[in-house]
Image 1 (cartoon, each protein chain N blue to C red):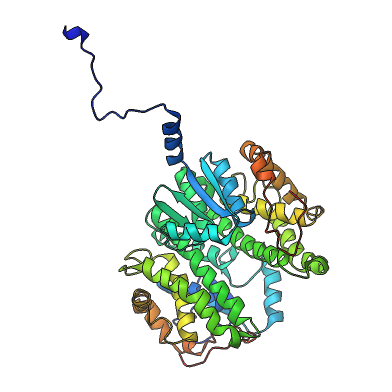
Image 2: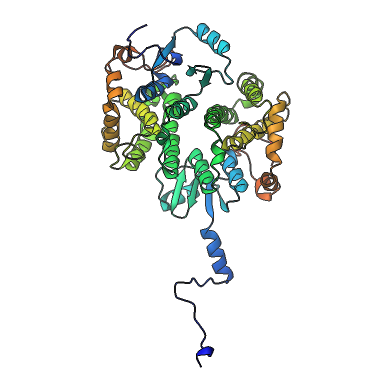
Length: 246
Length: 228
């Protein structure tokens, strides 16, 4: 009789239902949420980073202030801002902090730099790119961007591109042989500048090569072929500078 | 060459305008780290440009440091370099969570600084925009920082971190633009005092060099009162 007794599993064992709704629920629990406006801008390097790190994420895109206000009220932010990252109960803002968090989560501290010198160089490049990115934002929102474009390129963009190009000489990625968090920022700058003017990188072959190398990373390539990427505008439609349609 | 203690012969040369500006947090950091440094203080744009060209930086700018063979620009990168050089990596944070929190606070503090610089310092109409900038851009963030600080001695934890230097700088500027503006943030006031009590910082603030050095660019639209 005892041999016929069915041995029940101990109570501590999870019963992993294979019902679709439960599978979905578990998947969503493993998924982080990256929330931003429905444009590329500051979130795009983080989207590329999530893709590269194979971290499952919900790409939450706001179209209106009301949508963002609703989230602001519902979630417990220390400093409410966009982009934000939600991972379980944790909510994090500030794109640099989010980048660090994802690199730690994926156990990829090499992305900060593989030596102290690389980490210092990456910090330097990050500062340079922050200024460059600010200049791009100012240009895109400048009501006279069309007439000012040649001057902005001559006085702001090209000097920075030249310096970055010189710095990039002989390197596979911007810091060296190893990909770095700042490569994600750099690519977004180069991509955006090339969308402003298709010829913008013609004089900067090292930067073209680095952009190409980055684009050929399988995860980046796959992401760039997705509808989600292709349908996303670079900046708001209301910005004075009109980017070519995605 | 001035006060011996603060302009001594040393291995590190810091190049900048003869103002507090972006170099001030680095001065405070080097003092805190007990690093001797020499200052190359520019009052002349032409001379500064000449030096920048001679030093052959990949991204020429000031502040810069020269340390033996090494030359470096970008204040964040210089701060990192100093932390590594003195083997004080706990200043980044003692664990990953602190490092992430530091990056987040640094982002918030940078946003405050950028708003102060663009909407007040370099704004022709700063007088008209002053209150609005404080009400809409500065106070909401100070309130959040105050809540985030809680009862901690410094902004991340009870020990000083690199981001405290950036925070102190921004709080100092705000306090010297509007003397009562920090009063409603007791946690930030406590952090501000804790920072100023650090012996090396306290000593520096008593020097004539500090007291006589202008806060910011003479070309800025907003000018600080001299009495500090």
